[in-house]
Image 1 (tube, rainbow, N blue to C red):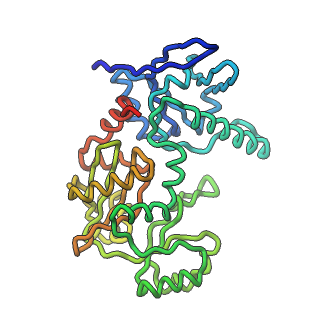
Image 2: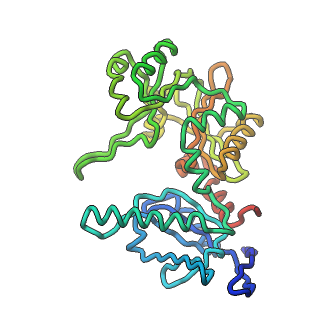
Image 3: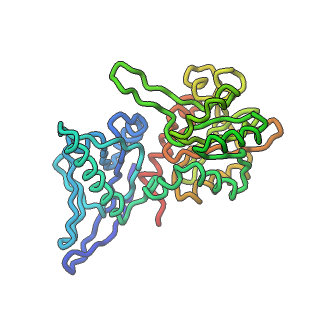
Length: 346
């Protein structure tokens, strides 16, 4: 298949130089299977892909150069040098912590901070690139409060919500919810092991019982999201990729393991997931939320209530979606590859 390369011009010492904008840049980590499958498809199509794994940035010998006087902003890897103006699209997928080989803890922390700032020069100096999605929009859209306000402004019902580290306020909200309240984490629902022989712990969405509310003083150390529990008929994961939308129904109420948080039920194969068609007006709301937050990708979680209403729970701007293709057959890998290889014009 033939692809037409876009071109642009940049100025070096009063000379106009044509630049072919054909590279696709992945910013992710070395264990990202989503990036693996999309990269494989793009390479099979003959696309030029640069994969920057932030967890091995130093050892992979990536080099960045920003030279103001010479007008050169470039990235070097595997013996190739690419002008940043040549990068047509960027997939900011799942970068991990920067690693170095420095043994001194203080010096290592200093080096990690410096490399992080070096990468920020990259994020903000890609003039021709289409982002999935851009750094500033990603950072803003990760905040649950902003998500809920945006969803409500786009016409979605949202659960009553209180985000706090105040135990007294959490107790008051518990009573307001008629003791029918859930707790969710503000960020990643994971506790990393302290030692190599310890397991990573998950922190699922949980119903707050009277026993838990009596221990609510612990919330002062972390804060948390508290929401009124909304009765469910079923749940829906909506994946927006550019101007394409894919909906998957999750029959979370058919198994005890997934009634409150469907993730364990789906992971262990106890909860059915299959392709689903949303009403047109609900699809439009999903598009509206995603675009209003400045995103070109979004994984939205919805509830369909027994009364037929659609409630918005959250949007993950870098959510996992390969499992949806595996369970439903929906072509998400191909759609992501299409978006990156043929991005819409600005």
